[in-house]
Amino acid sequence: MLLDLAIEFAKSTGALIGRNLIITDENGIVIGSDDPSRLSTLHEASLEVIKTGKPRSHDEAVAGRMIGVRPGITLPIELSGRVIGTLGIPGDPEEVTTWGRLVKRQLEIFLREKAYLQSAFIKERTLQSLLQEVAEFDFDRSDPFLLKKKMTEVGFDLEVPRLVMLVDLYHFGEVTDRIKKQSPGGLMEEAEMRIQAVKMQVLSSIREIFSGHGDHSLFWGEDKSVIMSQLGSTADDEAALSREAGKCLELQENLLKQGVRICIGMSGIARDIRQLGQAFRDAQSALRIGKSMRHGPGLYRIADFLTEDYLLSVDEGRRRRFLGAALEPLKGRKDMKDLCDTIRCWCESGFSLSRAGKCLKVHRNTLLYRLEKVRKITGVDPEDFRRLLPLYLAAITTPVEDQAG
Image (cartoon, rainbow, N blue to C red; front, side, top):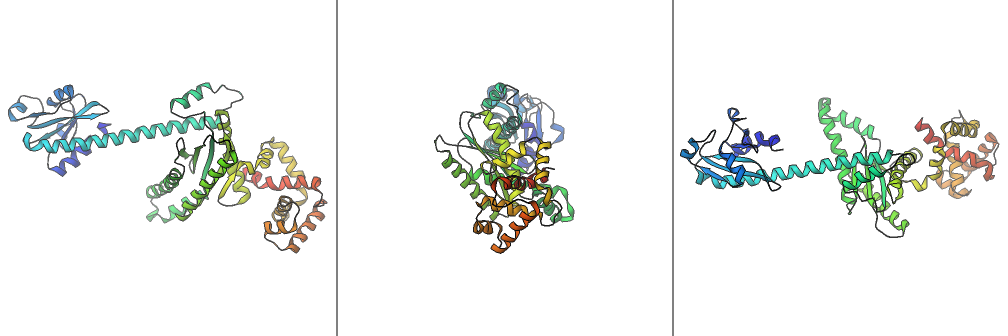
């Protein structure tokens, strides 16, 4: 770690205070200096400083008896209670001692910050990898013992209820295309930096809102972020879900003010590692189905799409046969989408003309005209629930089926 910033720190700080600094490693070898000839040479005064952990000054007479040493002061560089190198500042020891303490303190602050960031990055990447494993793990065929052990080792509490939410940048492809076009001269490097800035903007906003104890939020793939919200021990699941939904809406509003639109897929509550794996899949399904059916940014809960999710989990051959048979009379028609929307709103409104009209945003007479058209084309009476049910199921899953295909 010290090696990564030694040369640049020695050059920039040395120029600032007007001194030719050197930085050595834990063996007394110079790894940072603005004088290339001193790199990889021994600084003998550092050996005692590293051994004792105490600063040492050396005048011209003392320096003359040592290898690679000039009059000045040598101070230990400490990190986590261990001496990892030294800092040497040339000059009259009495004059440079104050500078030495200041520079030593600044260097150690840099090192602590870098160590923290590296540790946080490694922990986040490890957790990200483990959660990906949880999402893809086959709990019916394999024992999750080792996976649970690894999750516990990184400090992830598997004994508390959690909710998984997948946040997707709406029309991310269009966003990236626009950024690339706006970059001067089409500079890809600058465009990529701006794209990453947008993703960081989303993740930062997520972490501001989902900041409770045990909450985790991470990047998930190219255009998504995942939130694992730790729920309280309350027995009222609906109240917990409602609170989390409120946070999601707050997140959407905050990002919309910044010009960023998002879609969120929300799972049900997970209380163990098996359910957590299912929660990841449910959040993905809710996002996919919601985006396909609602056609816009929003919060999509798996609880609202259990019928669609069930139908889409059926064997692909059987599902396509069912959809094909149910919608055969409507295929190829220019108004197929309007008629499918009419069937969906008519059923979901409880066969109410006023509610179905509001759902479709059409006049009562237009609705009646469409229902009569459905009757003539399919031979199904819109008042006959049992015969209309296959048409409704096909209508609500066809957009998702087309998207998947």
